[in-house]
Length: 503
Ligand SMILES: [Zn+2]
Image (cartoon, rainbow, N blue to C red; front, top):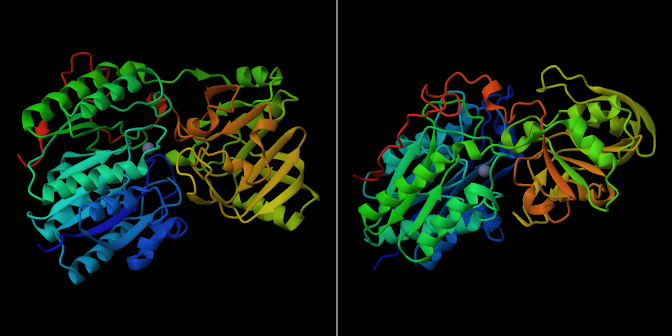
């Protein structure tokens, strides 16, 4: 029998609708941008979704046809639509040159462009129209994807990460790829889904503790006892001000009745627990006081999620540093601040020399003022680092040119491109060892827990300003559907019945 030929492609960008800076092609060039055979080489040692898809295709005896991968180096404002069309043009070129039986995609899933609210729905729909109904489309995406009806109508299967912090990129691709290959071999598989009109802040839940963990454990048990083939419980990225929108729950089984039952049951539990997925926000000053008294050899982690580049913020907030200076606090602290102009100044000043710096708060943090101070330039860097793990070990990051400057008891990593990574290498690589500080500022939502949980004395989510604030009710949402939690408490809302893909 002729081997099944599967085209693989990857488009990744996580959009924050409130970030004023649109994401252009440069962010993709600085991220991960490969085509054809070079793409296969590039993913061969990665534990990525795309490698998971490719591995599943190979294991099922199929042939992988690499096309294009375009991954933005960081989250940000809406993508310029021409970048989305460039991706589709490139995929189309590979489709023209090859006979294929399916297209397996790695997508972030929460992407908005300057012209399109539902980029992933648009990509799936466009590819479906191009290849026709009798080929298989399988998708692996982020737990924070906005998985819309339009996308689900265009594909055969979608699998999302089952962990947050995300530790299962490869496994997610492998799940989607394996199910895609089973569908291609003629197996009958039912994919049922329910979309709930809700978002909650990404700092408010994770899969290691609390109610979200309980739900994930229940779903895992159903897979382990072979009742379900697979499941995905999405929590839509909460800074996406778009319509259509929602948190989708997917259950996959051999028959439609079982798939529907579980999709509805998981969706109901997720919706019923909506008030439990919120963080306990702490005052910055209160955390600084606790850190001043921190005599342990472990840092207090102050989570500045409102300025997380992983959620599309610019990464230039100095809210915490300003509070330390305002209080004249002796706390030994470190923070990262994105400010390309200040980096250039540090390069001009040179290592070991003193300069007058005004840095931070220049792009996206509202009423904040930059910090102006004399500081010593400690070191200069090209900004390339690799994650040490637990999530994404070996994944490369590019923060552009970077400089470490010091004043008082404070060390600041100035970067040219903020990184959303919550990995400890974001500091360690630049000579800032988190264990040597009483307070370390981490600009991430939950990803950092994988790396920091074991080395932190305490972790506090701070009440800080920024485009990825957990205070969703204070953000300028305009486009999200009218009936939507938390803007409406939805006391009377009843979770809809599940739909089955292809029926
Ligand atoms: Zn995510």
